[in-house]
Image 1 (cartoon, rainbow, N blue to C red):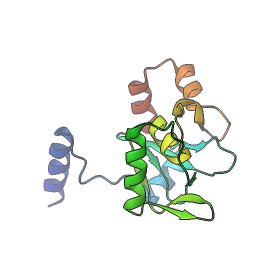
Image 2: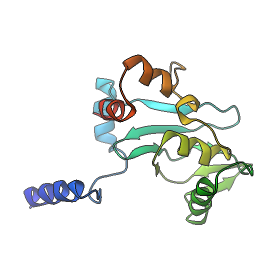
Image 3: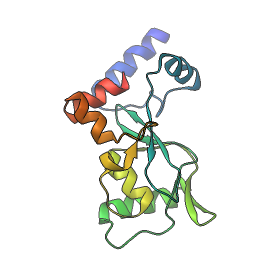
Length: 157
């Protein structure tokens, strides 16, 4: 049965559907990776809000408990405004103490999308997400001299 599930997962993944894969790694896998120092978490560079994200094969996952702005500027694109509204309607972002709080892990397609949806204004996610050393996602990528997609694959595995 387990072999069947693995083959099904591979087939679905090949077709672009990640139905049998978790959004983020399990606690056990996370603990093993932390010991190996392979999971890198990024923090949103914003004074009022604490947000933490983790990169995955599908994009960036904003972790449960992350915070963002309660209001959105009119300069936020229609696409990001719709995503933000949908997340609020679905209860994945709720208003709490003058800010939005993620009630669950939220998968978004890019670092810029994640930053803009949380902060409520357009911004470059490569500059706004920083690691524990204060190094931006952009600097980490540039220093490695990889393309974004190559870097994403290397960072995740």
